[in-house]
Amino acid sequence: MGYLIAGNWKMNGSPALARDLAAALSAKARARAPRAAIALCPPAPLLAAVGAAIQGTSIALGGQDCHFADKGAHTGDVSAVLLKEMGCRYVIVGHSERRADHHETDAVVKKKAEAALRAGLVPIVCVGETDSERETGETAAVIARQVRGSLPDAATGANCVIAYEPVWAIGTGKTATVADIAPVHAQIQTLFGEGGPAGKRAAAGLTILYGGSVKGSNAAAILACPGVGGALVGGASLDAEDFWKIVTACP
Ligand code: 13P
Image 1 (cartoon, helix red, strand yellow):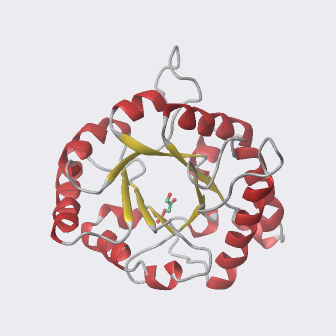
Image 2 (image 1 turned 135 degrees about the horizontal axis):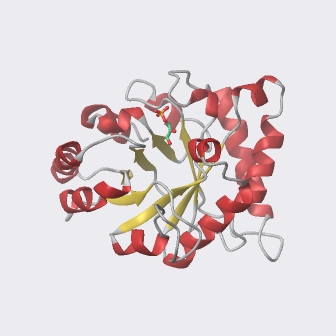
């Protein structure tokens, strides 16, 4: 599979920014077909505006989270079914900010990813260790627990994406090095292949993104890391020029 660059706008943006940013990126995608697949994940109220602006381009739409139920009495939540109807192809689940802010466990993340698959969306399942877990040498154990606990049995390399986002690198300007990234991506690839109902998932073609302070200036080095299949971009995805630098840095 080719590279995927996904912009996670988090709780940022406005109708004006959604229109302008998505229009600027659409113009770039029309002018020169990007080699990488691109997804924009705005806050839910901006999905329609972004969807309208990217229409007719190769840029895809994504949600930032979904509920694990398909519908019902869950005030404030958004279902994967509705995201699909709004034109989404992807949904981020298990982002570390949701694991922290909303106490989401691996079991909950797994149910959300299952809901995404049911709805025909590609879940982007996030994993990553905190600073203190890293300091105490627990990275591999945390990644193993999160990958084993957060992925649906039915996940395959074709219907699911994983994002490795070390929490200490998110929004901090601290970028992980090849030495930090490559072993974890290799571990995720191995763990992914061991799961599933038959004890083994179809892992071929699995895309593993890296996320954490990715920007135009460091994208080429990160995207060249062994096992890195793209990036999940926070802050830099709010700037059309910088985001496009990341897109064009794909090897
Ligand atoms: P930053 O790129 O702002 O560090 O955020 C990364 C992230 O959390 C993307 O999901």
